[in-house]
Amino acid sequence: MNRKLKLGLWDAGCVVWIAVAGSMLHFAFELSDYWKPMALLGAANESAWEHSKMYFWPGLTFALVQYTYTRDIANNFWLGKALALATTPLVIFVSYFGYLEYSLTSDTTPSLPIMLGIMLFGICAGQTVSFTLLSGAPLTANTGRYTAAIYASLILMFSTFTYFPPKTFLFENFFCYEYTGEYGILDNYQPYRVFVGIDAMGNPAPGSGVNYCQARAAQKAQLQN
Image (cartoon, rainbow, N blue to C red; front, top):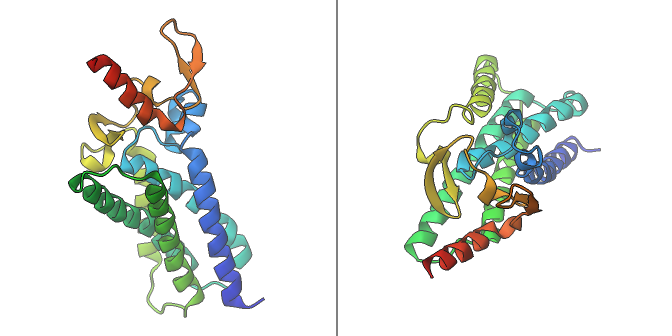
């Protein structure tokens, strides 16, 4: 198989893997019954940062697997993958907040399909960077220390900021398009339960599903009436 074609197929497969695995990690914290160590991998709240973790860990895992199969044909492998892991959240943040600003200023409701499209766009941008470097000519400069610094920084941030979040908008819980003033692991997850909720008596009850924002809006309307 042609070298570039093989690398391209691996990066295309990485897009699919990150999208699927990342979507599953969105619910991992709830499915673990909010077990705090699981917050290392899954989203602990609705902030932009917490969602970016769902793309980082699957991307890093895929890079480790891909190295086994493409190390003989790929150039600049670790640098390419490091930059891909850094590019994806950056592109998603810029696109997401740009779209959110447009939605709020034009008084329109943000669209879930567009949000998912932004996620996919960010993943594709990262893997485009990966393919460009892996299929390109070997870099003559010694990039080892910079590559190691990128990995160390990313792993450190994605491992600690859930438990020790900086108090900035990137890390603030953004529940149903409203900032709540909460960061990191929350005190109450009842409104966020998709699968299994808890009723007033403390017994298991159906969750709100993925449309919990609609359920919350209806709840607010009832309280106002």
